[in-house]
Length: 493
Image 1 (cartoon, rainbow, N blue to C red):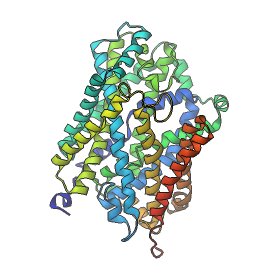
Image 2: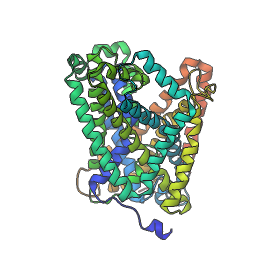
Image 3: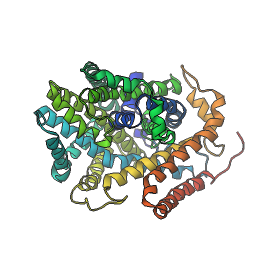
Image 4: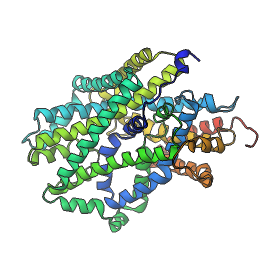
């Protein structure tokens, strides 16, 4: 190991670790996906299920990732090499995490570019007094112009690169503190404004009062799966992005308390995003269940109807841009750390190479909406972004989470005792030993269920033959993981 790697970067404060880790977790899924899922699945009833699954699914996986990072003092590229028994196949599983964080950035930067673009449009007053047709045509025009969309995508890559190039303390920790503080302040201002709009009380009731009768119409299974999936993916656990920040922290505090604090911040942002969007939708007669188009087609219409809409729209998209950029910075740092550890590079060299890799690698996603729009890999209406998101969200994230859990619990891996010792080291909350059976058997089965259900939802409508073909791919992934997990046996702990 080089001298550069022997001197590990570290956070200057506990607050820095919490805000940077929360910034990684807080992203587009909180402020874009969560509100429209609430709109689709009955408001408060969905929220209750979401909170339940955060406790029994999201936080346990996050604890595994934190424990591996802090104990190994490495990124996902080297944590298995440091902690796995000699001669085992566990280190081969690192490629799931490396591929997950890298591929995530190849389309997340594009969506972040959309946020930056719309922030600029609202600041200019482009949507002031315009019709819904104009707003829809603006969004379609943005997608149709590769150079314009490429510019905003490149800008999101460049901003993340600049912060990471400056280093952990002077760049990532310092700037993320400012961004997260501004994000939380903007969110509170926007939520208060939304709550006091005339007619917002109906939206507040929809958001806060559970309507279980509505859930029965939608189907309990669909709602439970939606809440379970959102709870799993919202914390960004499973691809190693959170692991790198745990590797920079000290051992003064136990991990359950830190995981709960970060989850609370992440959940607070998601809930407050709902308070911003849903009461305002009800106040102006706009449906909150518009799906993914809610942010770019529905919400701009809302601001055209609202007094001072240009100001409120600008603040809203600044808020969204900060949320998206905080994730870009965090995930880019994880990739940089992987390159530094794999190739023994200094930060500047790794940062430049990762920046160029992501900037060039983001081009297919941009072209997928215009020049390459005829490429529809997952069926009619899909594109490059859908394919990349499917690989990450439906495969690499759940499979990565599964490997972390198995490694932390199996005797031929790191093992439960080592995991529990690391989790409970330091002052604060402890994880009880009675969680062992759930971590060993229950949690892997839940993750496996999410993984296979994701395939079923995506391909069942295309017929049994198509579903069977894709299920074979899913089983092949699981078979490879099983081969790596079973490749070595040790004596009982």
